Amino acid sequence: MREPVYIGTNPSARPDLEELMARVARGDQEAFSAVYDVVAAPVAGVVRGVLRDRAQSEEVTQEVLVEVWRTAARYRRDRGTAVNWILTLAHQRAVDRVRSVEASAARDHRAALLDRTPEFDEVSEQVEARLEHEQVRRCLRTLTELQRQSVTMAYYRGLTYREVAELLALPLGTVKTRLRDGLIRLRDCLGVTV
Image (cartoon, rainbow, N blue to C red; front, side, top):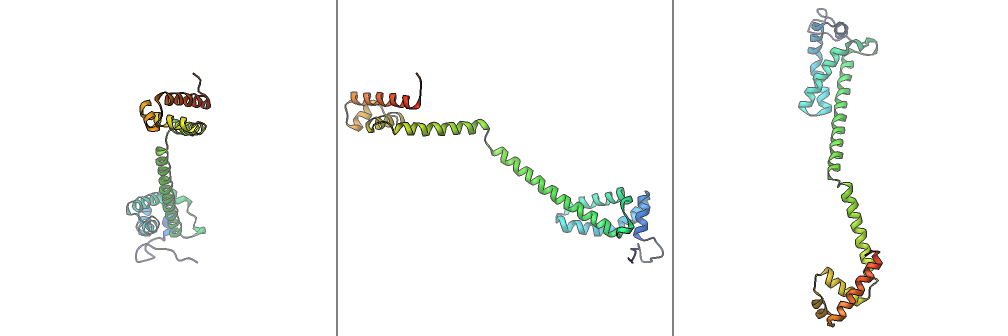
């Protein structure tokens, strides 16, 4: 048989904790004050052991003690001591707080990731640009060497027709013709309609 928990030094002078819980269940504030005095420190110890954060531990300890007041009628003497019931409540509430904090942190992390995710249109535009660049590269490979050099120098390096002709050591007319032919082939390869 379990030893009842007594308040004070003289066990016969006051009721045990189980009896106090029965009175708390009936709304007896003095009984709750006595229960509070006995269990507040052990509850705080259990909560602090789980949470390891002083401010949160104090908050959860208060929540547990309020829950003891509100739910004292749920305590069943035949299932265990009042201290064990209260400390179980404290442990459960502390674990719930840890889970809540972790879930909140996970939500914040997911929200931060979403903030860094570019808009759908940006992604779509980037994909389209990459595909277009790849198509242009593929079409450039279909040109003759002279056409590809002329187009690359004129349109990618920004050189004038005359500068292209000088670099390639070709007549200006030849470079213009190769550029025109190369651009027509590119247009056809890319499927551009005029």
